[in-house]
Length: 553
Image 1 (cartoon, helix red, strand yellow):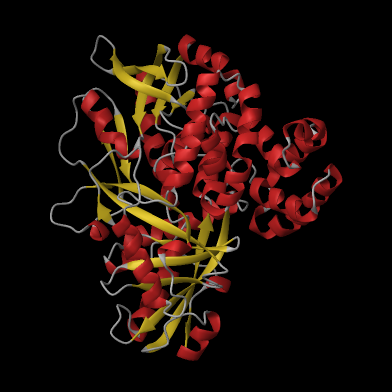
Image 2: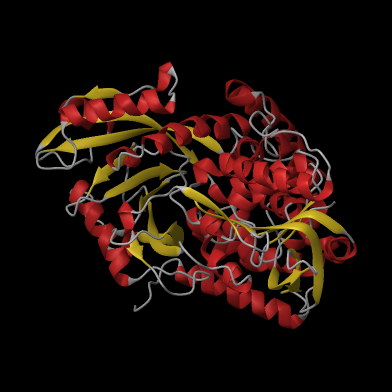
């Protein structure tokens, strides 16, 4: 099945006409992982998402596939062991969207971390997480710590821990997993909202009534089993099923700020403690530094979390506390993002103390719900729930399915020879882009971003050079947009600039400069009415404004 909104009506027809083994509600990283696991076991799987894929929590994280060092403080040994091992799997299956990032943990007089406890903690972490030899922690003196990052506060500095995290593009990771699911036979559609659940005569859930949010059409999708993986919205689906009882979700909000490296010349990723003993990341990326996160309880609409003036102030104070010479002000903030974390509520705990572990609930109607968990653990979470799903389908249909196939399965774009072969792949592949007409820099950028799918972008550059000129678009941007329209189910300019390319976050001037010309091409390809064009123009302008303006300003 195609993965493009240019064939939306055909995809809807497929959703309407058959009965699926499983309907997955929710197109974040968890839902995408479930769709891929189910499809590769031989299940007929369909996934619907009411926004764009990854539009919720899965594009608003700290963008780290990390091993969970912080969970050692909470003595969640099992979680550290599991996510540490999963981290390596996520990396090997998609080196184009995940990369090792050495992280510096500075230790100051009176801070959270002492030299002995940090050394022991990082050693235990290496052991539990199965960290490979070349990436095991080292302990640094104060002088060595400052050599790694001269901007760190010198007063009271005792030394540092040096260990490896993994940086990712969370939205692109989700998209690549979703594309892999579709490549293996799943069907997926964004902007499709579940309005109500359908039940059979045995009062078992057997599908959903969905509404196409782009056209207003309502139709039924039938399935033997239904999985609720809607993140912050899982309790809403449980309420539809009249099965919300026992544990429930508690949402917390986190924000991140983006600053140009001309103002904050951070050269080393740093994980540091704040005066109130919280932990914050400062990470260099593509000429920018991004810093976060906050952790506050949140009880408003999870569709649209926004940075507040106090959120921004908290992060700026944290930056200036640990990096006193940079003197960051509100004017230095280029962009930001806010996201909510759906955590399983535990009475009496602060936001940063609530466990990130995942849980599965099975209601009397047979609805399967998965909640909590972390980006790093998405594949294992999917394996766990699809094991249960497989068992239930065998009981219902007397059919057998393959065991889990995803442990060594590259995601879309990820078949590049693993992490060992990735750099060689980029060098070889970038030459194709130069022949296609891109500069060497742009060609390498495409090879890194799209991995094995990069030649598909180059092909569009070669074949569409004339069309690119007619729209006034640079060749690389044209190639990315044509590919996103034809193979990544992009529907709106915010989909493209925020979740397919990350420009709204890390190249906001580029998004401002090219938004209109991008929308002109999208309008033709997706047959927008003048009203649709006006709506998307408003949405795009709003996204750009909210990236820099907090609520209350």
